[in-house]
Structure formats: C-alpha cells, structure tokens
Length: 274
Ligand code: FAD
Ligand code: A2P
Image (cartoon, rainbow, N blue to C red; front, top):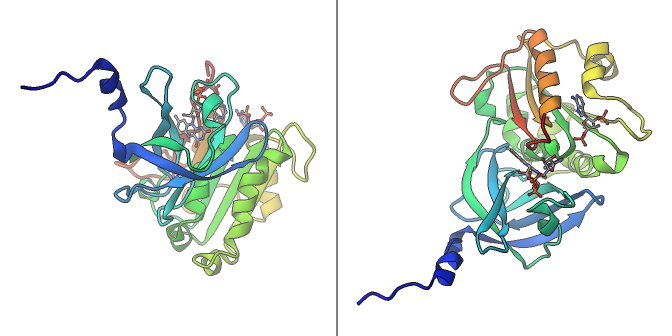
C-alpha cells in the first residue's frame, strides 16, 4: 500500500537537498549593494563568467529564484555573489538579510556568454561594466586563464556614486597580492573606474569617454581594433546596447559560445521597460 504525500510535504520537497547551500559570510557595501559567500556543491563545475539561478524559499513554499553571476572564480572552493538590494524586489528584499549559517537555494546549472570560449584569440581584453555588472568580471579577473590568454586586460566600471565602486576596487587591488595570479597580472592590468553622479577622479559614462577618445588617451592605448581587441560587456540593457553600437562601429562582431567572435554581451539585470 502506498501512502499519499500530504500537499504541504509535496511543496517542501520542491527544494531537493543538494540545492541548499549555506551562507558563510556577508558584507554590505551601500544601502543598495552587498556581497555574500556560500558553500559550493562539490559537483558544481562552471566557467568563470557564467551565471546560475539562486534564491530563497518563497512564502508560498516554492523557490523564488533569480539569475546571478557567480562572482568567484572557477577554482574557488566557495561561491561568491554580488547583489543589488531592490527595496520591493521579491527576492532581494529578503536576500539582503541573509546571515552566515542561513541557507540559500542554488540550481547547479551554470550558463552564460561572458566566457573565454565565446571570444576568438586576441591581445587585449576589455571588460565593460556598470553597477552589479561587475560581478562576472570579479570571477574572470581572478581566473588565471584570463591572464594567460591576454597581454593586457582593461576593466572599466561605471557607477553613479563612489561607494558603489568599492567592491570592484577591492577585488582589483587584491589581484596584485594574490598568490595564484599576482605574478601573471603584473604589468597587464588597467583599471578604469568612473562615476556619473558624484565627484571622483574620473567622471562620466564610459560610452561618452570612448566616443571622445578620452579613455584611450588616459590609458595610453590605441582606439579599438578588431585585430587586437576583445570585449565583454555587462550592464543594463541600455548600456549594453550603447556599448555594442560603439564596438560594432569599431569593426568588432558579437560572438557566442557556438560562434566565437570579438565581443560578448550579458545583461546585468532585466530592467524597467528598456
Ligand atoms: P526583480 O523583480 O528581479 O527586479 C526588480 C527591478 O529591480 C528590475 O526591474 C530592475 O529595474 C531592478 N534590478 C534588478 N536587478 C538589478 C541589478 N542587479 N542592478 C540594478 N537594478 C536591478 N543581480 C545582481 O544583483 N547580481 C548579479 O550578479 C546578477 N546577475 C544577473 C545575471 C543575469 C543573466 C540576469 C538576467 C540578471 C542578473 N541579476 C543580478 C538580476 C537578478 O536576477 C534579479 O533581478 C535581482 O536579484 C533582483 O531580484 P528581485 O526579485 O529583488 O527584483
Ligand atoms: P548615469 O548616472 O548617467 O545614468 P544604473 O544605476 O542606472 O544601472 O546605472 C549605473 C551606471 O551606468 C550609472 O553611472 C549610469 O550613468 C551608467 N549608465 C546607465 N545607462 C547607461 C548607458 N546607456 N550608457 C552608458 N552608461 C550608462
């Protein structure tokens, strides 16, 4: 005789045990941004730059999941995520309160286009990001493959305010002292943070700074050239479209896992009507 599972228990089994991971640390950067680390499923293999679905159990007993770039590199024994706090956001209004020891849900199916495999070999890699779009680059910057593949890596990060640059700046600064890739990074890294709504050493949208040529003059490198430059882009849809137009104007073509080319793009989030 088989027993009928009560409806309540069926909902509880919606999260199978392997999908639950334990939060190990949390750090808040601003009232809009935080990062946390959690355990990594032993079986999870991913390529630096990919994203997974993570979340919490919703009030209705069903998982509430959202796409998140894995911010840690593929060799790290833990996973790191860099997150927005949307005040009324179904997930992040709750996720922003996680503490070490809490459990999150993680679907171990990594995907994404911000991966080395989707680019043809080149000499200089540009990583263009705004806001939490820095997250996939936090992974790629800490991956030795990035430094083995390119002679030069330029990471640009544009935020409204200075404090929103902190997470990215600390990762960039730590690279040089990193046991694993400190030597590889030496002389190859160019970091270009800009703000748009608060005074900082470099102000302006990166798109404007590309159009004016200022970014190339500041960094002492020639304008974009499809024979040399490769690019990865991660920001709002409007940002991605604007950068894409500039890259295409310079002669770079968009690539994909199945058809590698000179640049790749991923949305940092799905925005309001853009
Ligand atoms: P939602 O209902 O999902 O979003 C509400 C509104 O908040 C959106 O319409 C948008 O206007 C705004 N919003 C959502 N996410 C962001 C954001 N990251 N930055 C600025 N505004 C935002 N989010 C992260 O914080 N970190 C990541 O690494 C990340 N990676 C992503 C990768 C992909 C491929 C995609 C598609 C999205 C990613 N997101 C990331 C966004 C994430 O999936 C959720 O939208 C976000 O966590 C908010 O969830 P929510 O349920 O609270 O609000
Ligand atoms: P701005 O302040 O001029 O809008 P957001 O928080 O809205 O996602 O924006 C993050 C950063 O990305 C901000 O500095 C913002 O500049 C910049 N940004 C937004 N849209 C674009 C775009 N289409 N092109 C270039 N930069 C953009």
